Length: 227
Image 1 (tube, rainbow, N blue to C red):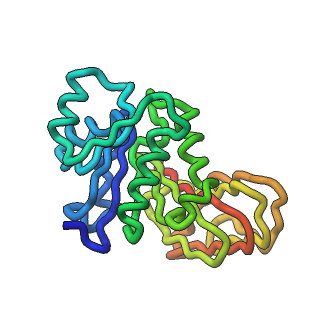
Image 2: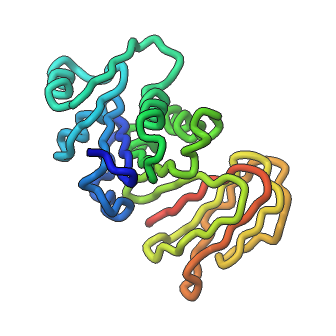
């Protein structure tokens, strides 16, 4: 039974989704709801997790794979390939509708790693601009083995230091007002940035347990990079 603190894990079809790092992000993995997005459904099956829901047009899977998905999934929602939304957009909309209070929506295989496509990555980053996802925006986490990112909206935020992360990249996706960064190697003091700007390769400090980030207007992508 789904509990109020059960995380939602959506798995896309990119090569080698990072199942191995899930315990670092999810403390109650046994309660998680796994949603397969198109070919990501097979990745969930192969990883040995329960496939509660499979969503997509499944144009990237063959007949045998589709049969395996139909057999393993508790529920399958299938769409025609000719549609306005991507499979991930549809899956996230359904996940949000069914589990609006979930503490996390973790997206695996959504960064277009290895054999993935850059246009898929951009489409997934652009989810942040869609008003329909605004209520869960800061609960979205894109996770891969060597990096992960999430979004922050205007306000005061604390970014906990991750000793394993080599870099902390802060990327504005819009104009930003009163942008302040404190406790990182490179700081900002209330600047106004009239256009999107990527401040990449910042670093946590060994003697600082957290980085403080604040801004009064805008949208920022926070990325941890492990190398």
